[in-house]
Image (tube, rainbow over all chains, first blue to last red; front, side):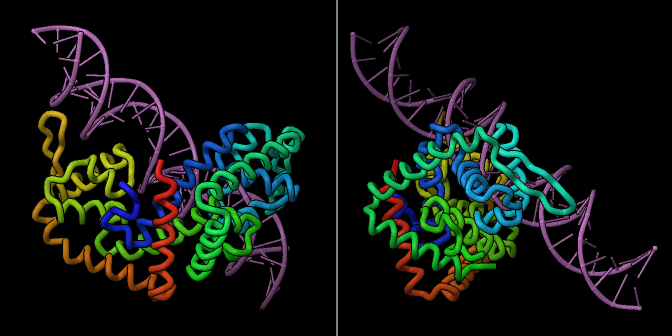
Length: 142
Length: 142
DNA sequence: TGAATATATTTGTATATACAAATGCAGCGT
DNA sequence: ACGCTGCATTTGTATATACAAATATATTCA
């Protein structure tokens, strides 16, 4: 059944979740090449671009709670892709050389993902939708 | 930080997830009155409206995997809101009297939720967004 | 008829995420 | 200097969801 055929298709709860799940699936396929989930991959890209970035900033930037950020970092640490140094109350997260080497491939996955979905949805249409989604998201700021 | 200020705000993966999480939160607050999560509540409403509905249909209608549907039903069964009968390979799910009594309040929560978000987003704007989201969702049909 | 295949559902297990409480440190006011 | 308050992070725990395998039934066709 198509999303738009469900009896709840007019409810944003239903629609937003259905879309997120489908996008998640698509994204997972794209990032399988580097053996990372999309959220790990995005976090890692920020860490590579801003070495020493703090969990709080990551939480802000990725719109995930601090505890989720901790969990994501833990896993990347296990994979030897980042290291954490804690001094006083602040923690800094740095990419390892292994992560830096991976960067081009991460970018490739990310570009690939954009190509795939804008291929399916149309470049303009998807850009417009994303803008609208963000506008709404901003209004729902807690 | 606003969603639209994140470095990834142009990526639909990021945007769709951020929106879904915010909407989820809003919805949870609305359904707290009946002590159900939104997905349990929506499933229950379908069961009340279509007594005897099968898990496969629920999966279709709610765009959730069969295993997720099983898990949702289990919880509603624990709460004595539905009962399951299995004959051969098909299972039928029925609402209990307790669930039927609850129906008006479920509807109330659901209306309340719509009011809240269309109050925040504007009635027309939110309706349009939902339509667009569904259109995209349909195109991403597996 | 009986084996192969297909369908509906459940179960085992894994993942992402969040909330609330705990921890550990920093800075402030007296 | 000391205790209070607040901030950044982590930890314990819970929830929603999914995938893959298992189960149990149904259908088909040789």
